[in-house]
Length: 150
Image (cartoon, rainbow, N blue to C red):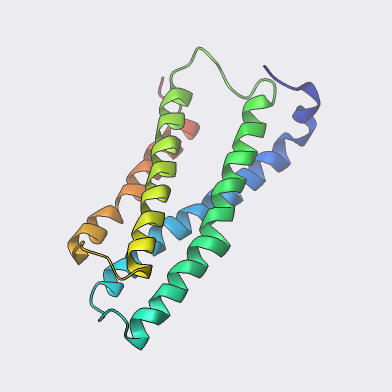
């Protein structure tokens, strides 16, 4: 199902989708890095409390709105006639990766709550490895959209 008048907004929708994705990725790449450094801090210390504020602001003021905007403009793109070649397989892979990226976002939100409540039990190494997940997903998404290998 598509909505014809959206074709006239296509360049703007696509631009806003990419801008939102860049902001979302920035948040998803920076938040686990903050967790890496937060692991070294004594719970309740002034430094730990500062990291809690930084993590909250990053998530609530940048990452969450950017994810919502990415999804909104992505859905609008899907509803734009001629944008998706429905029989092609690339968009299935892209959608799967976007769903995994959204799940990672949810996991990062939970990890932030753990730090907020001084309940983090994960080591730095966990967050260092987790920090690579959004990058891998982004690479696959970009290849699917630009190259469309299948």
